[in-house]
Length: 429
Ligand SMILES: [Co+2]
Image 1 (spheres, rainbow, N blue to C red):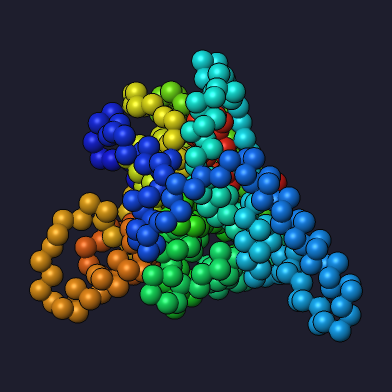
Image 2 (cartoon, rainbow, N blue to C red):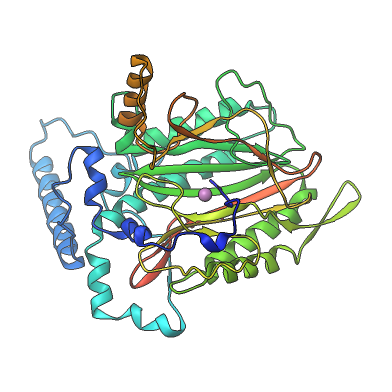
């Protein structure tokens, strides 16, 4: 989900330490989740190995007993493969040992981090952080790959969005129906389904009648969180090969951002590298050749616990922002390319809202408004959600000029002390 470039110069963006919270012990943020007793129980690799050995031994013992006692009803086997549509908990499929993202070693003056003892220690104490992130990322891969197979022209956007969100909630094991359940795990923000000139922040609301067409270019932006660790990742679908170069440009630009990101990298320079890649492409659509432009106003961003937009932004064009990426930062690297002007404006009905994390204490005179705000707080914390009324930030759809086509790709990366982990990387993108 894109963050909008601030109206004033991006140089003034905060470079405070808040980004580091994302890689801290996570203690403060778990309070929303009913306390955090296991906050300091970071498990070392050795402990994990030992535990796995014990588990395997216990499992063997169990099956041996079962063979001896034929009368005993065989225990129902835990499923080991995903269903279609996805419904099996990720935690059941992987037993707390979730697949890693793509790990990329740091280079140049940061090369020492790979083997540095102190950095390895820092990395090891973040066991819960990594486990939550990897679970959310695996849910993301499984749901989106199912979506890529099953989405077809002729389907309603609202049905596509519901299919994705129902699957996400099933895979993380929290349907979000009871109070506070959506805070444990679930959607990180409403699923974006943005067609053609609409680049970002459009989600179908109930009753939306829009039907996906063969000629559409659709950005699918999905956010999934486990214990507030939000994976933000997006891809673009089209059903006509005439858009292939537009999609290729944006995928290449996002991968450039992912590849060049790292500790001490300056955000304005990273934007320049992204832009250079993006704008080396052109795309012929219905006989007209368009240069592909980076969209200026839509940026990548840091992600904080329970907060999709942190304080740093990653532009998709060269800027003078000297802010550096730092150890512990979590970044959503996303780029948007367009056949239009490269500028987007607010348009249409708002479907995304979030409780402002910095919202001032407002005197809520209406008790109904007050109880609604409490409901929002209990159920959504600062995670963006659909349609509501008070003390909230709105995200109107952002659109390039009529008749243009836009595309988006996005990954979430963790700047761990020892290595960069592209947590949302999959075989698809
Ligand atoms: Co984003």
